[in-house]
Image 1: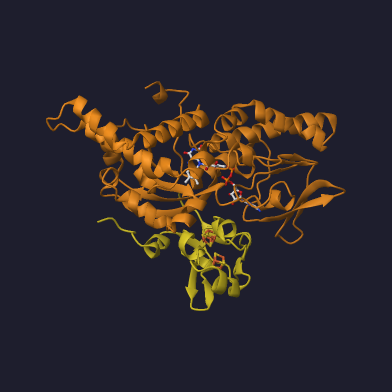
Image 2: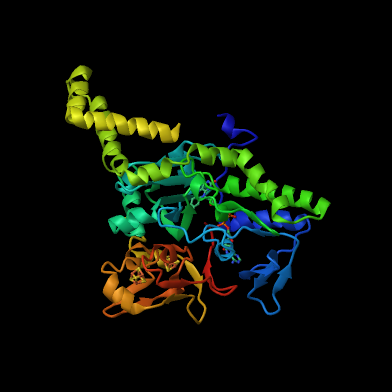
Length: 340
Length: 95
Ligand SMILES: Cc1cc2nc3c(=O)[nH]c(=O)nc-3n(C[C@H](O)[C@H](O)[C@H](O)COP(=O)(O)OP(=O)(O)OC[C@H]3O[C@@H](n4cnc5c(N)ncnc54)[C@H](O)[C@@H]3O)c2cc1C
Ligand code: SF4
Ligand code: SF4
């Protein structure tokens, strides 16, 4: 309940609105906002980034430092050779829908006070054995529902992402929450989930990389916006320092990378550095163990006259032969190691 | 019954300001024809932009969400991918 008071723990936002509001904050501080313009490449002179070339006529813009905040695809950082093309197991493809639902219905259904919100994380059957998760967030008079899986998983299982979204929406655990709502927008986006090992070069001569472009997402806790904003702040602090010394070289700007790694961003990404790849490499977790845990829990909680001892024995038997049990125990230890 | 079940219905909810020329190009349709039995981009593209028409790929770029999946997911790097020109492409109304 302390999350319902200031400083609030989390907000759900609709990006179209939030981004405008957030950009306005920068403008208030004196930034010049240029919309509807694509940065086509960095202008590099003598091994140093000195600006960006845009697709506007006479659209070259020069700067002491260019901050690349161009999101997951980050074609600009790729052009600079900071990262190669991402592999399909370094990105998750998320599809989502915004569902219109009456404010009072949302508050009743999710047990909320006015202006309170609720997030539900969906884990397990939602992704049909592919590494990924689903989510259901409340907004004021809409819900956001989505599901994301590694692109490599969709390719391997030959699954259409919107079919998976429909599957989640119609899942008996989810359907009651969204009953009576009306889809008003459909969206698809990649999430960088390569984690620690995929963080590219983030500082060069006259250039820094922040946010999704630097793969700064904690997929396990679904944190990305906070990391994007914090990395942006760390970049700004570094540039202020660089400006004071009039030195925009890589060795100076590399302070940013150090700050990043010392912050919760670097620490958290390090903590989970092997998690996604572990679950991707060993499909038994999502394909077998999660359904197995669900079955076991369901058996334990079924009131059918059998004693809990009998139930436990049956669950134990269902785990398979001694050899299979050893494998399971070993896999659980490994899972603990990548998550701890 | 929930509405927007098919991808066509979902896409109908999205606003696009389509440019007159495509920002997506399949470089060599022959690779699709001979090397890519699943035509995998027609499966994982969240907007069903790619449609295989016997010997060639139809690219409905107007409905592209600019997610980047096809550029990363095509096993033969056979898709040339750019952002649409400034002011064109998908328009986010809410999310
Ligand atoms: C479905 C989904 C759910 C999520 N849920 C959460 C959540 O619950 N909590 C959380 O913390 N995070 C969440 N995230 C992650 C979060 O959205 C991202 O981590 C965050 O938005 C990253 O911010 P960014 O500014 O780095 O990149 P983006 O928000 O992607 O912004 C990059 C911008 O740059 C623009 N751009 C790219 N290239 C160019 C160019 N060449 N020229 C001009 N403009 C360009 C893009 O159009 C885009 O507007 C979620 C992501 C998705 C997809
Ligand atoms: S995934 Fe690539 S090679 Fe396969 S059909 Fe699509 S464009 Fe062609
Ligand atoms: S960028 Fe995304 S939506 Fe657009 S064609 Fe490629 S996969 Fe489809």
